[in-house]
Structure formats: structure tokens, C-alpha cells
Amino acid sequence: MIGNALERRRKVLAPTYRLFYSEPVHIVRAEGVWMYDSDGRKYLDAYNNVPVVGHCHPQVVDAMTRQARILNTHTRYLTDKPLELAERLLATMPSELANVTLTCTGSDANDLAVRISKAATGGTGVIVTDFAYHGTTETIAGMSPSAGIEPGHGVFTVASPVAESAAELGARVRTCVARMRAAGVKPAALLVDTIFSSDGIGSHPAGFLADAVKAIREAGGLFIADEVQPGFGRTGNHMWGFQRHDVVPDIVTMGKPMGNGHPISAVVTRPEVIAEFAKRVRYFNTFGGNDVSCAVALAVLDVIEKEKLLANAHSTGVYLQQGLRNLARDFPRIVEVRGAGLFIGVQISSREETARIVNGLRDEGVLIGSAGRNGDVLKIRPPLPFGRAESDLLLTTLTKVLQKSAG
Ligand code: PMP
Image 1 (cartoon, rainbow, N blue to C red):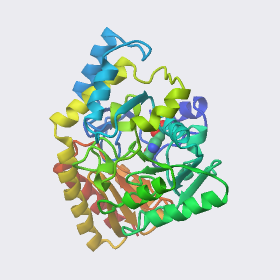
Image 2 (image 1 turned 120 degrees about the vertical axis):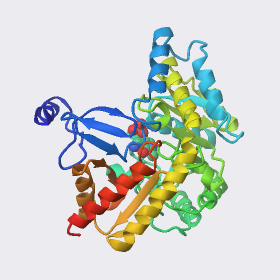
Image 3 (image 1 turned 90 degrees about the vertical axis):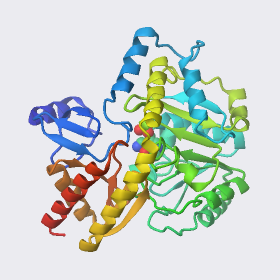
């Protein structure tokens, strides 16, 4: 089965794609926190943040099929679902953030956010961390150093602060603004993933981002919070990653978990920030805000609330992080455990050992990934219904893999 699929894939898909794991997994179905391969083998999903309420959640699937039978059109008509969704999203945000633009992917949302920030400030310079990922459009790929692409015109980087909980990000942003000005570029925005997912997952104290936000505003730029990974309760107790830092962004972008696997994303702005862009541009995104995608996103919000997934992300996150720290005592190859809620980065002593652990876990039926500039951070980011039993299974399997691997 898998051999055949691999061959077919090589033949018909573009060679730009990459598969996870030395032995790729041929997934045919999934449910909750479990994924099943073509041989009927079951894997614990400790990696996928997109199915935030669990794979194929029946309430989400029902909402999708119900709406698909009634109406699916776009935002040039007056329909109810996009309004309902915008109202529900804004209710999760500080009151300063008051307008929603619906888009389709995280890249799409970040691209629009950057356009809005340039129109609002008259600047063109954007600051990102030096191993960030923000998406695939030409502009945003140029702001995604982790994709191995040279920074685009007007893009400046600050050192990723992941391994330093006391890093002074504000001072780095100020120095970066000075470099930008020396190059004749006017600042437009600081674009930050509020948990530094690709940089290696941060473990910063509450309020960490505040000085950096102050620094970009003093320079006349805006703060764009990229919530594509940390958003929708991932970091525990809060809906959005920026809330842990006590800042109110000028623009928030979101995507991935928003549709539990269905493509929908959004840009949320302060009204004064989008005013200039709206004066100049009549924005229309054919699929952004279609009624089916909105119905799906509404169901995701319902399930997050009904199943108390924010509280679970916090309590399971604390439990799992503690379990990983306990393991570090026996296995010094575990250098540090970082993260918030159910977004956990485990710093490992080397890239090779990280790859051995990730593949070893896969062979034992547990799926995780890796992150960071050196590929030496285990990335643990399961669907939010992940509980203590699943954490225990992950921990015992990891122990077994660590015992087996030479290190
Ligand atoms: N921002 C962040 C932080 C991301 O991790 C990603 C995707 N990995 C994106 C933006 C882009 O999202 P998409 O792939 O939906 O375009």
C-alpha cells in the first residue's frame, strides 16, 4: 500500500513537498487524537494543532454538511454566517480589536496584515525573528527565514529569543529599527508568532512581548500578532497567545485550527489601523468568508467552549511538561522543556538525537515533530482533547525510545 502511494506521489505531485519521518506514514483516517494507517495501525497524534478539537469532530462535520446543503456563497452578498463568526471572534478579543476580514490561509492573512500595516504607517519595513515562519506568498515567504529564503526587501530580523527566557526583545527591536532607518527604510510593523513556534517554542514569562511592542510603536510601526499556531486556546487558559503577554496588538492573524482542517483564516484589526487601507482598496477574497467555512469555524468555537478545551490545554500542559521535566533527570539529552499549555518544545542535545527520537516514537506509534534553527527541539502540539492518559502514553513511549537510542 505505502510503496504504491509513495511511487504515485513522486510521479504526480510537485517535487517541492516533503514527507515527515524516515518511514512515511500512510494515513487513511483519523478520529479524536488518533490517526490510522493503511494497515489499520493506530498512532497517537501528539503533533497536529490544526484538528484543534480532535480529528473529524462530529459536531464540526455536521455543521459543515448542514451548511453545505443550505447555502455557500461569498461576502458580496449579505449573509448571516460571516457576521455570526465575526461577532463570536471579536467577543474573544480586547474591545480595541473591532474589525474582522475573513481569508483562507495563514499566509493569506499575514499578507493582508502586512499590506494593511504599510497603508496605515506609510512605512515599508517589517521586523521578524530570525527563524520565523509566516507563510508562502512572495511577500510573506520573504518574512519566513525558516523556509530558507533570503529576507525580502525591507525585511529585518531580530535574534530568536526562544532559549533565553530573560532576553530583551525590546532592545533588539530598537537596534533593528536603527538599522532599518540607517538603510533608509521607514518601519511599518513588527510581525511576531507569539510563542515563536518555528524559532523553537518559547517559554517566556507573562508580559515578555510588552517592551518589543512599545519599541515598534515608538518607531511609528504596528504590532502584528501571528496567532496562526498559538491561537485558539493552544497556550492554555487564554484563547490567544498575545493575552499571556498583556499586550493588545494592532492586528491579529489566525488560521490553521480555525476550521479544524477546513481552510479558513482571518485578520482582526483596530478600526483606525485598517481605515487607510479600506479607503484605497476594495478587498474581495472569493472563498474568504464563504458560509460553509464560517459554519465550520463557528462549530469549532462551540466545541472549544463546550468541552472546556482551554482549561484542558492548561492542566494537561502542566502535567505533560512536568512529566517531561522528570524524564530530563534520567536522560540528560533532554536539555530544557519549554512552552505554554499544549504547545511544548523539548530542547535536545543534538539534531541527530532529535531525529532518532522523532522517528523512534513514530515506530512505536506516537507522532510528534521537530522545530528550531538546528532541528534540535521536539515539537509536541497535540489536538486539545489530549488528556492525562494520552500524556502518560506519550511519556512511557518516550522513555522506551530514550532507553533504546544510543544518545
Ligand atoms: N504563520 C505561522 C506561525 C505558521 O506556522 C504558518 C504555517 N505553518 C503560517 C503562518 C502560514 O499558514 P498557511 O500554511 O495556512 O498559509
